[in-house]
Image (cartoon, rainbow, N blue to C red; front, side, top):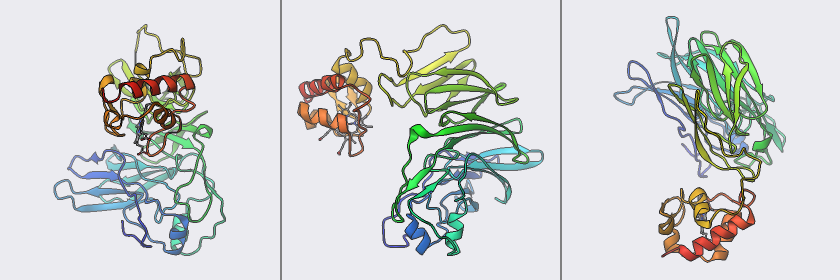
Length: 381
Ligand code: HEC
């Protein structure tokens, strides 16, 4: 990214895998650049190729075309999804979308816009970046913008049989000042929708409202389309009319997508956000008789009685190395080398910080005490 004000500018990255067309063209969606409103208003620029779908020659990497959805973005939107290559009649399309809350169909050969469809709740700020480019934008802070930083089309869409399936999150965010680089949002307050759009025209075929955000992408199998919602449900919609055919509560909140192979569906309870929630990878199969860990919100059996060692394996091993627990994570410091005291572990686990999540509120004080005692006594041994 070119730096318009001598400050460090980050972003403009790709979150998701590219699509590759039949002729080898590589299509990539790119995120935004985190510029605060003050920069976007006073030194606006298109900031190519942020918030764009870009087509590159698969052999040479040369730019074939780009389509920028939001120039001069300062609302932390993105065109972050994997583009989808699809045929509508004789025409080849690239379908892409992002946190700005629009779905776009572009001509796969030229990048020319074929249709665009607004999805989810918008509160009137869609053109802010463009208006700022023209020096025509006046804003008052604090500023509430919807879609917000975790709104719009947050996770990947699916296309099947001439229909685009779009999971949409409705959640506003607030920017306190002109110089705040990142807005804030309360995840628990989000709602959502799953939509079906006609691939050839972008017309909305159905739009099913959801009590929470669908952060689990869209996955099609036979006559159903699946997602997961942040409050921890797997949901199957009928592709014919969007009605909910099946729904199952998971043992934690989740933003995990779904994989389906044959008659087996695999997803995860990925986000332990409440008391007693556990992260698990879960498989469902037609005709299976397994049972789930007690659902989120209900107390796990003998809560807190779990040993410090198993609590460590469940909550800490993915990021830390600790030989006693056969843990080899490298995201956080090596605890065998650090040899922290019990008090240091307890404080860090409770409060988090420096890239580590806080566990206070997710783990009980007894559980934190058990982990701290275990780490202090086993680190370096
Ligand atoms: C998502 C990754 C992640 C998880 C999960 C995680 N940590 Fe950390 N941890 C980190 C990072 C990153 C740091 C470095 C923080 C810093 O530099 O301030 C850290 C730091 C620490 C420290 C050092 C604190 C200090 O003051 O030096 C301790 C002790 C620790 N973690 C223990 C744990 C325990 C126990 C758990 C499980 C309850 C855990 N961590 C879970 C990433 C993680």
